[in-house]
Image (cartoon, rainbow, N blue to C red):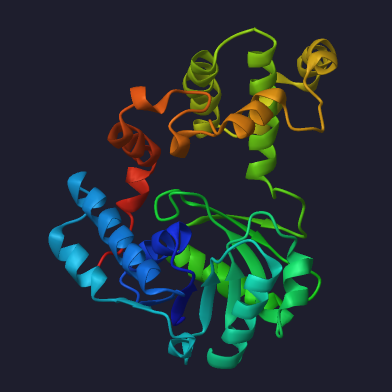
Length: 309
């Protein structure tokens, strides 16, 4: 069995740790500040409290899981670890320093799985002293709940690193897609950006509202593709009809390569979304606890598969 660490004590790191200890596996989290470590421990505890509140875990599960968690600022604690999820800021200097620390302290053949969604795997490989054991394993928030992980190899990734990563992710009850090489945004974020761009365009054209776009996605697009695949649906409709639809719709789709006015105006005014209190929505009118629950609720059944301590 792999000895697992998470390098990075932020939101992704704390949720990754929740997932690991939730499967009865010890986990060491490496942070860089005392305040960050405290936030990480509190975030993991809050994740467990949410699971308990919805009947997915017990206080005993939480107690046993938390006992499996070690949180420290000392990278020397990586000694003997064979698998490290890297979850630090998306910058080359930050990641290079982490890869050097892992090479210094962790097991010589330790797999380094970067949680990056925006950096090319080839660039990451160039930052590592041991590129053959490095790959991307990009999760989705909330990481401990949403099951998909995008695994991306690069030219020097050793087959054994891929095999070990897939084996561990299977143990953690993850669903995996494997990309032969990086493309900007990988898979899911490419799909998301296409939808975001078209949605903003429709609002700017006065076609409809943010609320109605979300209603259309929640009660048609989201429900449809939760049960059958996007391309299963394409095949079911057939190339003939889809060609006719494409001929009518393609010429009118938004194809801008620039940030749209709505986004630029929001950046200029400081109305940048939930954290700012206002973006496309006025978040003062929303129930934050309800929103947090709705973010997690589709994944409750997956948590019931965990082999909790």
